[in-house]
Length: 343
Image (cartoon, rainbow, N blue to C red; front, side, top):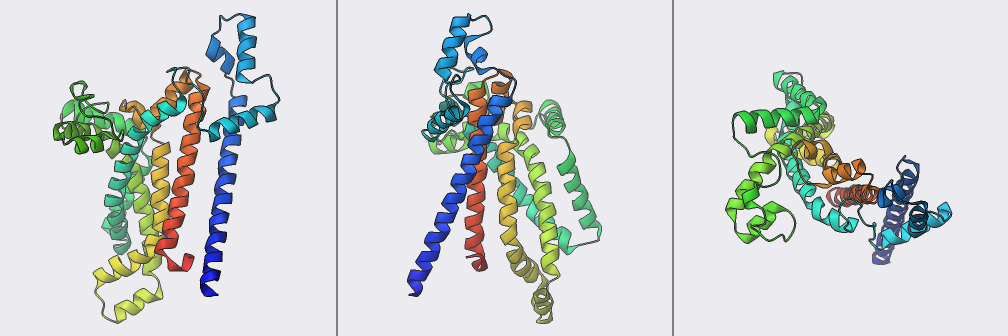
């Protein structure tokens, strides 16, 4: 009976997750659809141009289905999205999904490295700040966190370009690659570092890394500050628990108490913190991509918005929302995996 009961609970949990995901995604599609109908951009004019004849405009209205009731338009929109059809981009004349598949790996590469740097540096800093609470390392780390959290991304990016690229010449400039290195390695994943490594072309790898380090570092400043601040808060909570006092009374070393016991328990909520930070970097790298001419999803959506290309804007928005939903689901599953009490 116990195995059957366990299987029943697992099925019920999976069903609840699927229903929650479906409802969230449906809400996302509904909001994006309504936004497209509210913004002061005429999709018909964007397609046929301002000089089109009334007959051409009327034909475009019928072709786009804008002459139908709103609920019917949404049903058509929902059906197309579920089939992976986000329409055709006015700006590139290609399917929006094809454009997104081309630009999203650049944003993924940028946000992944930024999150990795944020965790690698921010987590130990947060632990150190908690252990040294009230002393100068704590004050210094909190000051650095405030700097990284509040500094405008575009200003920080411009200053990084001016100093490290313009003045010192330590890194490459804007873009993902120098012109000489473009198309030298086959695009397998769309992530240049991985593609260059798979091809064994370490010269292209080095050039791509040199271009990546500045924008990733600028984004990592935000991730680092957020992760360090949350790590400090969670560690202070754990270090004040009774089991820490008991461990110290037993003579367990301070390093083991901090890094194994306290951090081990703080790691559970930190998973959600890191996952949300990663999702925000995937969604919020627009200014960084513009400053560094990084051809990612943020730049794509911005250019589409400036060109009144609503199909591309809505397609990019849906992808960003789907990423948030997926990362939240993944963090929830990891939470249950790490903490047996949540199962």
